[in-house]
Image (cartoon, rainbow over all chains, first blue to last red; front, side):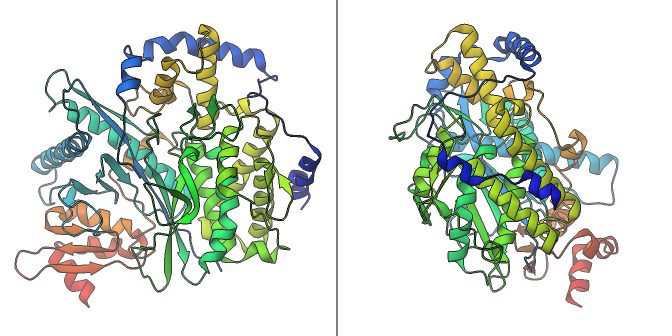
Length: 66
Length: 500
C-alpha cells in the first residue's frame, strides 16, 4: 500500500498550472555523459545515412494504407 | 472475471523499389514475400533431403480460403510460427500469431521485423541489377499518407461496447507518451495553433473520428470492426488502429501490456467499482493530436466534466487503478503475476522518467531515441527542421535492414534475447491455438489446403477437404496437443483421432 501511495501523483496539481509551450526539455542530469555518447553517435551517422537522402525522401510515397 | 487477453499485432510495412522506372508497390510486395517463401521452401527441402527424411517438407502453406475483404489473387502465406505474411492493399503485412501475453507479442512482432529483413535479402537475389527494395516499419510517408499497425485483443462479448468506448479512449489518447514512434513535422491540416517541428507519434495526424468502422479514411480512435475469428457468441476481438509501429521492445511491451490491463479493468467494470474515476475527454480527437504535438508533456487536456489534466497525469490515474486492480483481482488475464508485475513496474518507471527527465529514456522509448539523435544532428549541422536530411533520418530509423537502421545504431534496451527472436521466426507460441496451426504446417504443410485464424483445412488427396475448426484461441496449445501430434504419423491419423 505504501508503495502505491508513493507513486500516486496528484492530478489536481495541473489545474493550477498555466499552459506552456516550451520546446523539448534538455537533459540536465548526467548531461555530460549523455552528450559524449550522442557526439560519438553523431560522428557515425553520416556513414549510415543514405547518400541520396533528398531523392529518397522525395520518392518515398505510400498510397493505399489502412 | 476478465478473460485472458489473447493478443496480436498486424503491421503494414512501408515499401519502395529503387532503381525501377515503374515502381509498383504491389508487385514489389509480392516479390518480397514470394522470395522469402521460396527461400524457406528451398531450405526446408534441403533439410528434408539431408536430415529429416521421415518428415514432410514445406514450412508454409498458401491459403485457399480467406475473409472476403482480402485480395485473393495476392500472395498470402501462413508461416510455421503461426503468423500470416501477405500483401494487403499496396503493402507487405505481417500479422503475429495469437499470443497469450505482452512478452510473446513483443517477441513475435520483432520476429516479423527479422522476416522482413530476410525477405529484402531474398528479393535482392531475384531483382534485376540496379534495383533494390527498401522496407520500413513505420506508419507514414511524411506526405499525408499513412498505413497501419493494428493491435487485437480478445474480449468477453458480454461487455457492453459503449463501456469499452468510454473507458478506453482516455488510455488511447494518453498512452501516446510512451507508445509514440516519433515523427519530424506534421501532416495534419491544422496543428491547433501549435508549432510542430517534431511530434510524439506517427499516427495522431490521421485521426478524425471518435468511433467508426473506417480504417483508410476518417480514421476513428475506436474501430468498430466486429470480426472475432473465434466463437462470436463468447468473444469480441477489439481491433485497435490508433497505435504506432514500434521498434523499441519496451514501447511495444508497454503499448500492448498496459492496454491489455486497461481492457481487463473495463471488462470487470473496475473504473466504476473503484469510485468512478471518469476520465472522459471533452474532445478526444483534438486531445489525441494535442498530446502528440506536445514535447513538453505539460499541456492540459479538457475533460468532459470540466476538469483538466495532462496526458501524464491521466496515465498515472490508469496506473494507480491498475495497481489496485492487480491487488484485488490478480494478473491472470495479462499472462500471470510475473509478466503483469513487469508491466506495472516498467509503466511506473517510464511515467516517472517522462515526468522528471524524458531524455533519460533515449535508450528506452522510440520517440525519445529518435528525437535525441535527429535533434542532435540538426544542432550540430545548424539545419532547419524542414531539412530533407532530417526527414531522411526519420525514415531511416525504421529501415528493417540492420546495417541501415538508425534504431539499430542507438543501442536500445531489449527485453528479449536475439536467439529467442530468431526462434520465433519459425516456432509458434506454445500457449495459444497458434501452436496447433504452426506445428501442423511444419509437419504436414503440403497437405494443409488452407490455414485460417479459426480453422485448418486438410487435403488428404482422397476424401473431400477436411476442416478442423479452432474456435477457442486458448485451445490447441502445446499442453493440449503435443502428445496428440507426436502420436500421429500423418494428418489422416490426426483427423481420425480428433474425430473420436
